[in-house]
Picture 1 (spheres, rainbow, N blue to C red):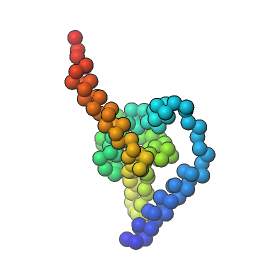
Picture 2 (cartoon, rainbow, N blue to C red):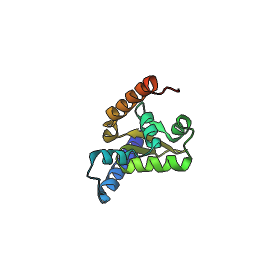
Picture 3 (spheres, rainbow, N blue to C red):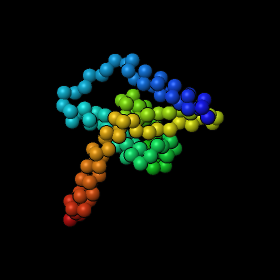
Picture 4 (spheres, rainbow, N blue to C red):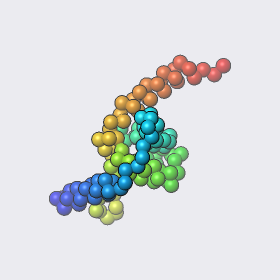
Length: 131
């Protein structure tokens, strides 16, 4: 058990080191554009929605977002990990087990997603009238 926790900790440290070793990408001047750039697709928003409830495995996303292709899901998760929004933990087990969870940065998007949810509920209730 200790070895598993140690290896998980090492994986996290290696991921953080890799993230900080990369050159910092140039961000847009507009803060809204920066935010949109990080969650720039409906798929990333749905992945965020799912991660707000709990840690997930790849297959969990496939079940909750059946319309997303394997390629797009893989790319979206990788991008979100690289941006520091999502943490990917690969456990040294057979068969392999990988889990995804929100980082502190990802959790800081919680109020943004909540406002979007509230706005969507209001729109559904009041403005989505078919005439």
